[in-house]
Image (cartoon, one colour):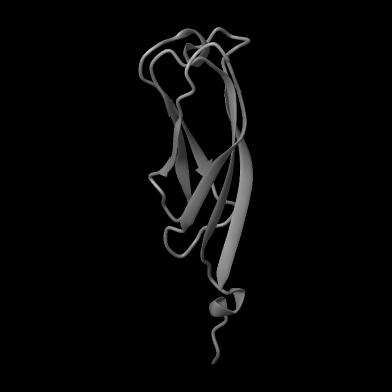
Length: 110
C-alpha cells in the first residue's frame, strides 16, 4: 500500500523579533524536524516547496530548501540563505509518498 502525507510548516518569522534571517548577513540556516502522521515501512520520498516568503525587495533574493535526514518517521526541513538577503518569514509546504503497512497484515490466521 502507498501512503501520502502532507502539511504546512511555519519555519520562521524573524521580522517581528529582529531575528538573524532579517537582520543578519552571510550564510544563515533554519532547520525544523517534521513528524509524519504515520510511520512508513521505509523512508518515503519527500517534496518541499515554499508557499510563503516575505522578503526585503532591496536585497538579492537567495534561497536553498531541502528535505534532509529522511526517516520512516519524519524529516528535517532546511532553509538556507546567504549574502545580503533579508527574509522576514517563510512557510513551507511538504508532501511525503511511500510504502505503508496494510492493517490486515496484523491478522494472524490459526
